[in-house]
Amino acid sequence: MSSRSAHKATVAPPPPLHSRPYGLRNYLICLRGILAREGLRFLHQRERFIASLVRPLVWLFIFAAGFRQVLGVSIVPPYKTYILYEVYITPGLAGMILLFSGMQSSLSMVYDREMGNMRTLLVSPFPRWFLLVSKLLAGVTVSIAQVYVFLAIAWFWGVKPPPLGYLFVLPALFLSGLMLGSLGMLLSSLIKQLENFSGIMNFVIFPMYFASSALYPLWRIQEASPLLYTICRANPFTYVVELIRFAFYGQVEWTSLAVVLGFTAVFLVGAIVAYDPSRGLMTRKQEMGGNA
Amino acid sequence: MRKPLSVLAGATIAAIMSSPASAYMAYVSNERGNSVTVIDTETMEVVDTIEVGQRPRGITVSHDGKFIYLCASDDDTVEVIDTSDYSILGNLPSGPDPELFVLSPDGKTLYVANEDDNLVTVIDIENRSVVTEIPVGVEPEGMGISPDGSTLVNTSETTNMAHFIDTETHQITHNVLVDSRPRFAEFMPDGSEVWVSAEIGGTVSVIDNETREITHKITFEIPGLRPETIQPVGVRITDDGTKAYVALGPANRVAVVNTETYEVEKYVLVGQRVWQLAFTPDQKTIISTNGISNDVTFIDVETDEPIQSVTVGQQPWGVVVSPN
Figure 1 (cartoon, each protein chain N blue to C red):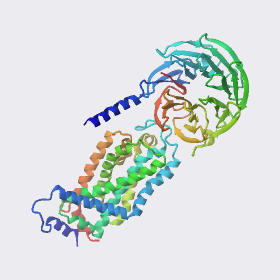
Figure 2 (figure 1 turned 90 degrees about the vertical axis):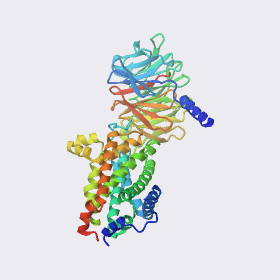
Figure 3 (figure 1 turned 60 degrees about the horizontal axis):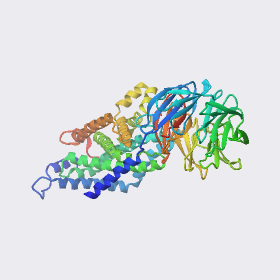
Figure 4 (figure 1 turned 30 degrees about the vertical axis):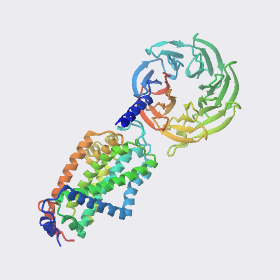
């Protein structure tokens, strides 16, 4: 069955039990269902949970150990005194978890589409944007849980931001997760096949992560290469990292906030448009092969 | 409604009570800047800079907080600064190249180490006169005095000894050989022990004040740092005698040592080439001078976490906090 019929199902749902449009309660039930499914999927895939933690922890334990002395020479805001490299890269690693998880959810959407699970979601009588946003929220919730587990382990490794920082960082993580998740969703609408995910790794995740302030402060990058500095400044992931970094210390980095909000809006609208079979990119793609 | 309000009021009062009633001033001698930086310890901001003599190093404050005594090493004098208006009131006859000194517990006598002359000069502050000069080892530097004022300990950098001096007779009673280049001597608040840091040896020797023998030797080890970069200099012990802080020079760390077990509990990251330390009078904060990064770092004594670093003049060397 092609997803074109799924689209039909959305347009003409089975005879509704209620004649009036769905209320907020129904929307919430739907949201809860999607959240529960994503949560269950995550809990059942312990390997995925461990894998998502291993990556940043390897960076923290191994990479940061070798670079411990890198930052001992300068104080960069929001830090008020000298910090170890582990402390510096922790916000970047939190961002890394969100980035990978955003891309992973894009992978899972491609997988769902290929395996046909996507139809289950798309036959729902709720508007497509709502379904996509729900799926996004589910993904963000799961990735924030991952970040907190990572932060707990980092605490034992000596990375101890102020206790209230763990609370302040929550909205920053949420917003960043939303931005990276909608980027993933937008990308997933562009990917035709599962195999193309490695392309995302090479062309999206790695450049975004490395050409940002996650690993080195921008002043140091500027010293090394003005071109790289310009690229880092243009990279939205830099602003994700800085937003998280400042939030740990109870501060709002307004530029980062504005950039992250802006990109979230752009990616989200892009993803919703791209997933709308009647208009966006999906129509074109279906012609090329909706059936795997 | 009444209960939450009273709780709130109680909390507010508690908050007001717990915050320091008055801000203390920290005075930092800048060895190359020929100045003293004044920092409000509550706001951790620089409030003033005092121009002083050449190469200011050792710095201390009178017990009533009215005067600062400062070793202007290259001017061969100890300057007296009025803390009310930061004017230089005059000099004390310190002898040549004073580096570090200690004030007697009664506040009347200043014991100065004259690095170039291998002497300890005893100064009567009131009369601004030299009482006597005590010959000690080569390159004397560290000066510590027992809480009862009866024993003075001077360390000589090249002789590698801690000299115990009777303050009544002004005679050396004991010489204790410690590790290479001893820099600083600090008594336990109960007078039972003297802690002597050795810069090149990389150790702190704990000397029993009764037997005048070394009972413990504290060593330091920081992962990722070469042992030769760990150079203990300034030492400070809390008033309750539970914790000692040791500035580790180019290791850019302050070691926190448990005085019961003599084990290092933590290394606090501060600026470059950390040299001397000073507590605030409430013992909530300890301040380190970081000579190469030209700043001082405030460390919370309860958590041993660095709070903030403040830029001061060129090459900060010593620090003291006024008692009021």
